[in-house]
Length: 508
Length: 105
Image (cartoon, rainbow over all chains, first blue to last red; front, side, top):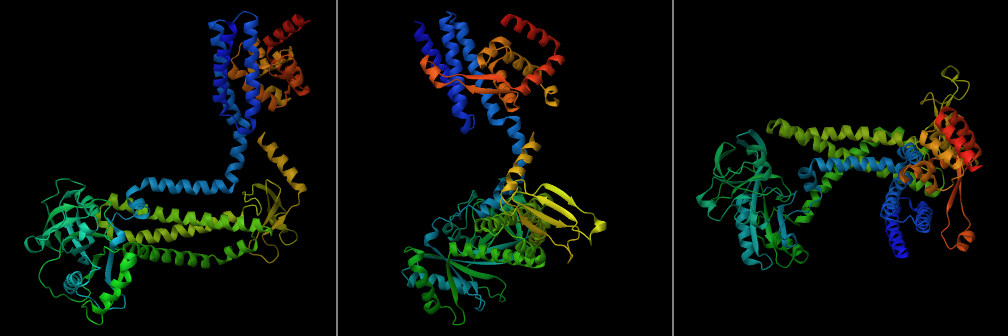
């Protein structure tokens, strides 16, 4: 009977110990478990041999086994290990990258709609693999929207590759609503344009084919305009809104995910049926085509067809692009702008960068790679963080102060980005220079050399020694001096042990 | 000696128990009445401070008795010194030390 009870008791104790052992660091786990199991085995057998095994002592033994969790936690987070970790981890390159990544994640969490939807979520188009955009070439003459509309209708009839064609014309406009005036982009669209892009309204309806003739004052709002002017009021349908002084009636609101390709259009009105001659460059036109054969097959054929037999004037040439190309075009121009800003800053900081190169990693090849890889990764992450922070900051200010400051948002964001980037790059270079050239840890052990009085007679300044004993960085008192300069000296293997001992001593 | 002054009452109690000849975890628990969650971390800490040292019983001995090997703890020279100093501070423990010594004799 006792044997059975003993087996059961040992089984339960082992189970508890095994669970607790998962907390213990892997390299100590085996020995830890061995000690506890040995103790439990002896205790349990002692209880049996001394005939003291009863429910009370069983519970007592199990309770002692629960204590193993505390012991396991001590192994995982004991004071010395924690102190050691807290002392050494902030100096490591991984800590630096983790901190920047954490800042990035915090920014992403702070602005889920404005940034993440713009940057990471794919465009919500229904079938982007079968949609093409048509827009006049940059070197081409201005194209009248009505002419493009008529030509687009012709294309669907005469070219089998094009199943559907819709036209739009966009222009900068002034909207006046309950929250005041706001500068936005508005677009006139032919029926079916929003449906072609997957714009199912969250309130009301989109524009219908009869609206062009019967409801020219109908307007569909983008989600952002609905929020900025009406604070997301669901009773917005039927309410008035003034576009360039003309009274319009709201018939629908688009979802937050909806995005017009290439432009941030805030409201959509019917294209109109008549021909309204306008001044050149008053508004800009484009067309959307649905090609059942797929963009890979149809793109080049459609472009050559429109440019050669599309019915457009001979001095007008168009670009036919897929929606993905259009998205990338916007990103490309943004990337070029950022690259130019970075190059400008690097040029302005050329002395620091040159110093970074001269003081670079120790000549061992893996060290050189790690040195520059860390610098580039850190700087890139910082650049992204600064970009996101400046956009998010401006978004928050606009959200707080209202639509009146919206027109300054772009410029402010750019200036914030440039200032932030200057600070970030300068910090990144300085941080890099104060790191060990071998292990990339920040140099913390400081030794003051000489004094400023004897600066001309002896090397004065600060020697920063690597914790791991890899080398010493000499930082002179006078940075811009021909007498003494910042230099890195590699230490041989014998220093590693001494440095290691000192680190240990400082922890205890 | 500066380290010895920093020893907590629990640590000194554990040291004293080991010094009295109780050399493994459950034995120390039974004598001191402290729970396992206190005794084992205390043993780890004392071992880290080099006041005690541990050794595994030989596998041969354990195998001969058909039981798992145990880990035994014993005081180091530093541990003995630290205990001697600590006992001056904790007068009650000194009495326990005297009692235990006479009992084991």
